[in-house]
Length: 149
Length: 156
Image (cartoon, rainbow over all chains, first blue to last red; front, side, top):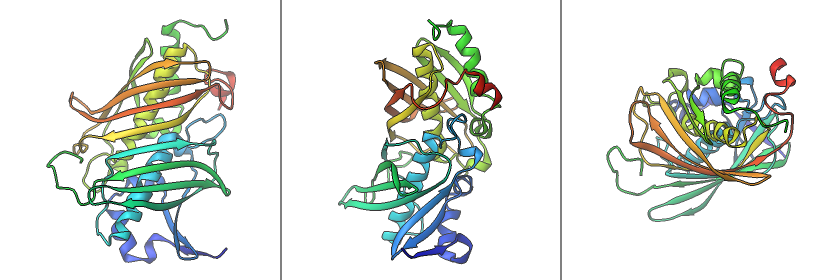
């Protein structure tokens, strides 16, 4: 498996994407890459990501946040948008403990509808699936002022 | 029963657990406002280091605060700090987070079995009663590792 490292500072459009949500992206430590032409996103464990310090697992909220950022970034790239769309609903299934390590996220657009686009993100730790997130984006919908939808 | 302790004791322990000893909660500045009767309320202040591009707290901080408050509500319901882990979580975003505002989460543990607890809650901007998001989910009880009020916790 060939992995092409692509760090944020090397690519101006990547910088623009992450500047839109900084500095929280920096807190997550989001990294982008690609494997055989498919997008991959990475997050390395640090102490500030810890949920259960006794067994050193990622906090569930950090994993969900990472998934949402990955889904938004991937969707923005797919739509050639210069900003990150906000999701309206996220559902997240935690399948295994996510111990300290590097999480690899693999996004996938499940369906791009007229009103809603659904993005699925699988997260793996050392090749094992640890969680799955599903994110609904009201892409194409009318702006509703201060409402998120 | 070893897990049965008074609500007050657990409020004190929970405040210790969710306080400065925990790296993430310390970074977020998470504070326990109330914990009793299977309900919990927590807040976090605005922080530029956790903001998005609009000058508001990133939505990820709201998810993290909600998830954390779910845990505290469950601890209150169980009257113990037995290890728990999120099974699934659903968050519906109702409104954008106001720029420069802190956040508040209020969560109730609706019910629980021997192995699973079920929660429901809402997220708010500080000093505002209009919900920004709702949360529902379930948590596994007695998962990996020792209880959070064990000796290991106090020395970690």
